[in-house]
Image (cartoon, rainbow, N blue to C red):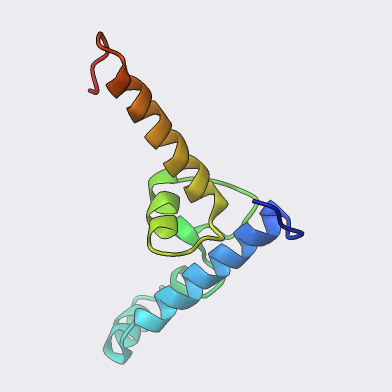
Length: 101
């Protein structure tokens, strides 16, 4: 997909969107619970997919795929993993001697 935006810029955008969306889902009474336990840093908007603080690092591929499938097309890691899982599953399904498990 042609774009002038770098992959890293898109991942930064994806992580920011994830953090902002997560914060928007937290109810006021949940914030009280979070503050009482001093967990504010874990729920900050700069924590992206799977709690990542550095958008140049990758972990928890399942979380990236879920984020991509939820509609965030900037999550290129999720896109790449999802596309490759489909390719592997199609390849295994096409092989008469292959097991999908």
